[in-house]
Structure formats: C-alpha cells, structure tokens
Image (cartoon, rainbow, N blue to C red; front, side):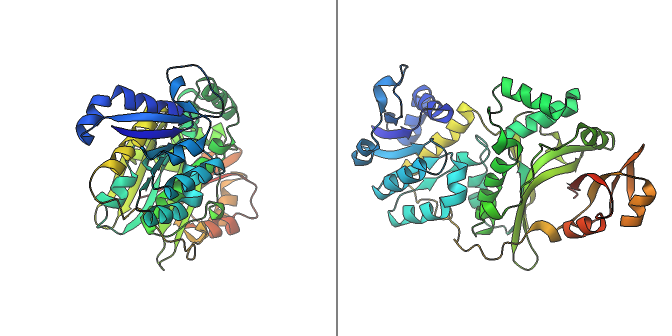
Length: 398
C-alpha cells in the first residue's frame, strides 16, 4: 500500500482525493500496488466523505515515514512554500498545481528536491489537465525552443468568448463568469493577466533554461478592453485573445509578456473558446506544436496531479531535465519585438498615415481603426505619441 497526503481540501485537493478513490483499479494496475490518501491537512475540520483523514498538524505528515508523496494544493507562497520545503527535506516527493509558488520559488525547490533525491513535479500548474510540461521537456527535448505562447487562463477566455458570441460588454461577461463559478469574487489575478504571467514564466523557465522573474514580466489584462475593438477585429477576420508569450531573442536573450492580441482566424489559437486553454510551442525542428484542453477545474487539474504522483513512485529515473538556472540575466523587455499593431484613434486616416505611413484601415467613422506594418513595440509607442489613441494591441502573425 502506497500512502500519500494532500495539503488543502479546496477544489483541487478534493479532486485529487476523488481521482485516487474512483480510479483506484487503474492506478493499482500501473503502480503494482494500491494508492491511498492517508492524511489531508486542513485549517478547519468539516463533515464529509474525507472527515476521518483530516488533520490540522503538518508535523504529523512530515514525520510519517509511510507517507511517500505530498500533494500541495494550498496555493500562494507562504504556508505552501514552508510545507513544501519541509516535505522535501523529509525525503518525500512533492506534487503541486501551485503556479505562483513554482513561478517564484520553483528553481530553489527543484534544487532542494535533487539534493534530497526526491521529485518536485508540477504538471498541473500550467494548463490544468493539459499535458504540456512533460512534452515540452521530454518529447521536444531535441529541439531548441524559440517561442511559447498561448491562451493560459480560462476565466479571461470565457469573458472574451461571451463578448464575441453575444456582444456582451466586459462587465456583463465578467458577472456571468462569476455566476457560473468560472471567476472568483475578486477576479484581479485573472482579468489583469497575473495568473497568465505566472504560467508563461514557468513555460519560459523550462523552454529556455533560465529563471524569469514574474515581477519583470510586463502584464496587461483585459479589464480595459472595449467591445468596440472586439467587434472591429471580428469583422476583419481576427479574434481577440489574452496571450502569455515568451520568445528567444536573436542575441541569446529572452523576453516574456502578457497582453491582448489580435489573432487571425486561420491560427488555431483563435478558435479556443470558453474556459478551454491552448499552448503553442515552436521548436526549431518540429515547428509549431499545439496542446489544447480544459485548463482548470476540479477533475482535470486533479488528474494531472495524480499522474505526477504516479510518476514519482514508478521505478524509473526521475525527470532530471525538469530544472532551470537561477540566473535571471539575459531577460529583456518585449519593446523590440516586431509585430503589426492594431490602433483605434480619435482622428482620421490622414492622421494615421502621417504617424505610420502605409496602414490597413479596418474602420473609419469618426474614429479610425487600422493595422500598421510590422514594427517594434517601442517604435509603435513613439510614432503614436501625437495621436489620440483609444486602443492599441499587438497582432500575432505567422
């Protein structure tokens, strides 16, 4: 009998307990022996099917030699960081879905896990139930990864989908997402791009091999996005998506950022709707490879956690490739990345042409919406400084 502990009994923690119980036969066949949840750390005891497993004393889990894997589902970086360090130091494998902890402290925790000859795995921290980190580090290991981008937050994608499908304003679509349980009462981390920023940092860390500090990543959410721009983009054959994007730069540096983009309809990312996520990885040998599925939710995320638990326990070498350097040097802002840009200005086509030269007009009715030729973000900001800019977004070409 293999025994594990779960830290936290929220959505993901409950899902992990359910998956272990409901898929017990499949798990036993693959591991060769049964897998059992022995303890669940909670702050407040409550009645339910897992009541007999609950404890409020992490020390008991830490000292229990029968517990081989700890699944951290607390979230945040305070208690989760402390408990993770203690569990790894006690010689236990740790699995997590905690993207904030991995983005901010993952390099340190991976190093500790290697010293203690245990695993620290976090497939569920990006994309929920979508298997993307394992393929990135193993199946695409023969590639030089040049770019990673994607729709990494189901809440914002649901809001944008409703704005396109029903013509809802942002505020109305947000309320609908909250009513359905897709958005928190305080949706800041989602709609301001903070959640997406953490996830793109993890992807970039693994893709490029160097730490990217989430605080260095420019982040723009969808809170100021106008329904007018969504409609103009749609009529012109584009969809608006909030993307996290990380790019390897020509000189060997790297950049990452989060922002709304116009995406052509022939790019498969444009068709990712509702709470679904998608990650596109561009390798120098494979070209673009896309991973798609449910990016959150109790059972999809729990499925990824339990798969990591099983990998920790199987008698094969640990994934040594899951690591990156703590060196943050070489990170550059995205200002020099060249793309076309979408602008909506209060002014005429003449004003747009004076600032940018040749442009592609999308709308002209008192306000003018247009696309520029490819230029850097810094140049776009500089050339538009004399215009009354109402909206500006990058265009994802290629």
